[in-house]
Length: 93
Image (cartoon, rainbow, N blue to C red; front, side):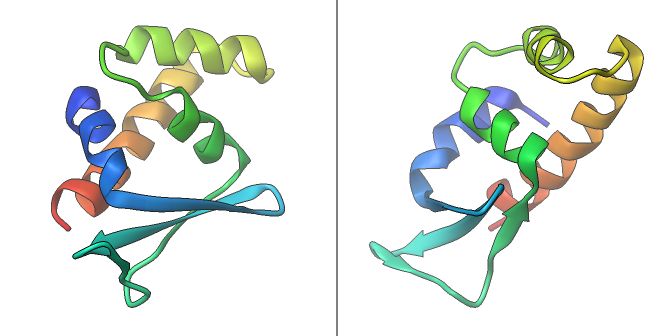
C-alpha cells in the first residue's frame, strides 16, 4: 500500500457525497464505470479527502486522532486496513 500511488490515482475516479458517505466510481475513457463502485463511510470520506501526495501513515493517523475520539494505535491499525482495501480497489482497477 502506497499512499502516494493512491493520491495519484484519485484523478481516475469520480467521488460523490451521498449523505455522510462518499461513492467512488472509476472512470474509463472519461466515462463513469457504474459496474464498479466503492462506498466510503464518514471516516473513509475524511481519509479520502486528506490523502495527498506526501501524506504519511503517521500524518493521516494524527489527523484521524485529532478529528475523531480514537486511540492512536486503533486509528493506525484501522487506517492500515482501510488503505489496503482502498489500494486493492484503486490500484488493481
